[in-house]
Image (tube, rainbow over all chains, first blue to last red; front, side, top):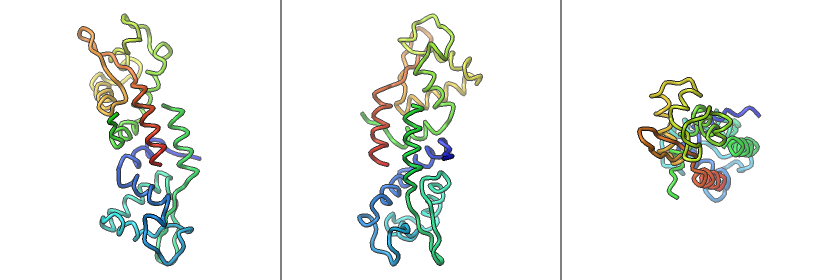
Length: 100
Length: 100
């Protein structure tokens, strides 16, 4: 797995982005129901509702998480659905432990 | 312990600052001998030699690590000596694990 530790740490240094990862851990708890099952991911629009932030701000945060490799996305029709990349998150924690 | 997770993550997102923490783990291995024992910390000037960076750049990196709570410093005469704050680093890792 080719994580860039600098990029992951920067991505995690914003509290909203850490919140987003927390929400993605338990979508049923943090998001209102969506048409597609949460198994395929959480629709970007749900984050706007949940965070109260603008669509463009939310998009930028999700893009940062995705570039860092912490989430994956999947397009269904015109919508983007996001999921945590658990393997990447575990690998990041392992490497950080090792480095520190 | 009152760690600001945002600040710690930002401090760690620069590779030189992570290197500095690594060097502080084993001062005998990474730094040439200094007049004062490494137990009181590593003199700021040692980081200039080791990193090849300017004194002001090194000072700024050390200050960032200190503000984040990852290192402590102690003044002896005109010199500042730096040590890892192991309790803070452990607490940071614990909280990050918990959040992620």
